Image (cartoon, rainbow, N blue to C red):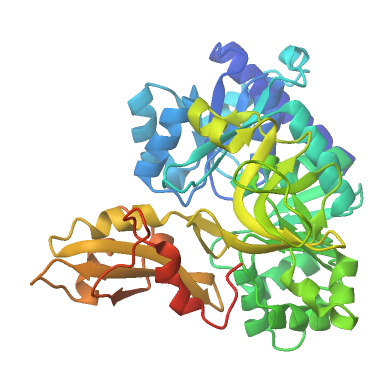
Length: 493
């Protein structure tokens, strides 16, 4: 482990020298990374920080138009990528007239050549980074469909790292496997594991496989990982009976990001033991807001079954309040908007003061979720103010799909909503009303979406037709009324 950290120190020093000496980049400028999960993610993040610059990890699942939007906001001075994305990265870089370094995993490429020619000595620019300086921009989708750049300083990242270590029991002996895309793991996994001196590894995040997870866990004696509910469902479906034995080294398994049926949780706990911790939070607070801890899962199976419908109690150093539309606290048991306060809250949405002002009010981060808190402090999500669809742990903006549907000449109204799906949490449903005397088939509309720039995860699974859209008192389409029939008998969380 010591040798690995020495190597990380030297290689990140080299990258810092490349950025500040070879390219003469300045403190606070951005560097974007577009790669699949790989160990080089850590050294790029650390090297960029040592150069007193700002790390921007990109989601490789984004389409090129989405990345154009992100880079227009981040305005990076360089893109570091790998061969699979090199052609696209070169096109994106050409729009901004910035250089590209190509990282060939293992060896080779312009990235390795640049590092080989640089000094491995301590990077003096690390002295110029202070707690309040910018550390990273984390991009996540918003209700408008345009990615939001969530800006964190070094102090917030370190504070949240401490919280994650305490809540997820991360120590120097931890062996943390990152199974979801790396851009979602900066604050929740990478920083805390490095802070504790533990080991971090990366798995392929595409095409999750239970047997492959077992193989990796056994080979590396993994102690920690985080899976989205879709992965947990796959784990149960694929288990031939030996998965609990093969995953026995895991002591902490975090999950979250989308709804999960209570019965599935009972099966998971019975099969794998009390290793689960549920996370509810937002990227804007570096991830952790509330936690349904291991002991809560145990209580749920013994004397408090209602806890499986809860998202837990506030995490360490986090304050959770429920407020009415005027910002006043509501009484226990009543519903209100969930807002978060704490030292690891974002600085704001990068270069978007208006958007920041709507979400961050008097230091409190407004979630857009409606919930209630019981007398024991457990939080329950009641509904979403925002209409985001959460599919397999990814936030999808209905407006993006609706814009495509509206390009069809026969479509009068379109409402895209999430409906229950046992595997993915929510499926994407398009509900369409036609102009008088006009029509189209479901296959025709689905094909329209497939031919658009929408990524595959945003494609509707189904199209239903309605004579007239329900509307509220001011004439807007009532999304809740559209969604309700599909959720009858089930609670949308």
